[in-house]
Length: 115
Image 1: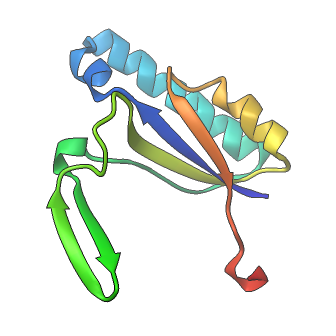
Image 2 (image 1 turned 90 degrees about the vertical axis):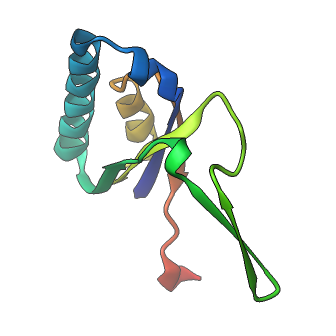
């Protein structure tokens, strides 16, 4: 199954982290990525820029409205994602425990050929 891991966290945690904490954080991502590769494969993975760099575009009836900044003001913002092919959702849940402190939303990816 192809699954997307959406990683939500507080940007201020990273901004305030020491070099040692950042190194530990990245080591946890490396361990997570190794787990995904050992149990399946990684299709894509990216960290996102800060929420201050966001541009929100809303399309309604053929008109696009552009707003600088995020869609919502929240303590946790989408900070990155992984897309992986894994044998089951249980394997994806097991992998999440390897990540730094995040809220992780798991979503199966829809195969557009099945629509």
